[in-house]
Image (cartoon, rainbow over all chains, first blue to last red; front, top):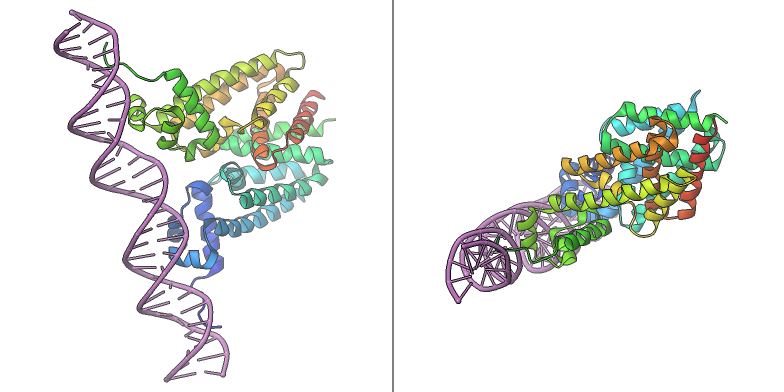
Amino acid sequence: MAGVRQFDEDTALQQALDVFWERGWQSTSMVDLAAGTGVQRGSLYHAYGGKEQIFLKAFDRFAESFLSSAATALAAKQPLNTFFDYCIDSITSGRGCFSTRTAVEADAPAVRAAVQRLLDDLEELLIPATGSREAARLVVTTTRGLAVLERVYGDPERLRATARTLVQAISSP
Amino acid sequence: MAGVRQFDEDTALQQALDVFWERGWQSTSMVDLAAGTGVQRGSLYHAYGGKEQIFLKAFDRFAESFLSSAATALAAKQPLNTFFDYCIDSITSGRGCFSTRTAVEADAPAVRAAVQRLLDDLEELLIPATGSREAARLVVTTTRGLAVLERVYGDPERLRATARTLVQAISSP
DNA sequence: CTCATGTTTGACACTCCTGTTAAACATAGC
DNA sequence: GCTATGTTTAACAGGAGTGTCAAACATGAG
């Protein structure tokens, strides 16, 4: 096949993810994506269709990587504490929680659906460590809450304390 | 004093709050606010300075009303359950959680500070019902998490179930 | 009634973004 | 080396929002 893509798709999508993570779904423009990937706007339109399609591809990479790290954390001796530590490190060391920001900002149905899939998968992953689906949902909900609190207070230690409070509460009875 | 404001400030700010609540901080434009309030764009600039100042005034009204309702709920027989029921009703019956969406979307420092003040006040309000500051912070965090989950799943019953799981967990020891 | 004061209005110039297109381009397969 | 195919490029027209300004306008105070 002649007429071959001049940019590396893997690299470009990773860079696109960085841009979306940095600026958020809403205020990322095709111009930003072109700048961040080094690929001309026209080429991006040609290759993917538009912002939403690029986002979905980038989000999939994020989700895969996040779930795999979460699974690793949940295999530790103290699964919940290790999991929360991972989440808080990820949220704190940088640009906030990508999926939470997306959940709140995104309007497009396909994007909402992608976030939902991620949370569904995370819930399944958490059932063994929590003992029940309900407890798993509470943990998922708390991670989202922590992500919001990070935006407001930006204090990792405070987030860790709150996470510890939850783990203690659901471990006591 | 001559040269008097032609629009009712109270009404306009309430309508501005409606617009911000409906469209969110980011995608609300001065054009939207002019349309929603019936006040010309130029008059809004003249009277308030710009979007951020209008938002702050509107947010203060929201915060006042929210905290007063929360206080009422927390005076009930089962304070936490009643409080969560109120939060979930408020989040669910309409346009999501205004403060959470603002926390996640807003970049302007003054807006972030306003959200922080609201959460600080809510935390204080929750200490008697939860028994400790740490537990109060966990409850605040959970309400934020519920707000995010509402955006993703939009299912009130599910939110109520998760809230019940938390209340049970922090009430058991 | 008059006037000074602050308000309203519509228009202006500007910036940023979108989505498309035609022409230039690169290259795998023959 | 040609050629057909898909890619890249720069430019275009259009839409939406911003912040400002001078002129028209109301109205309380005198």
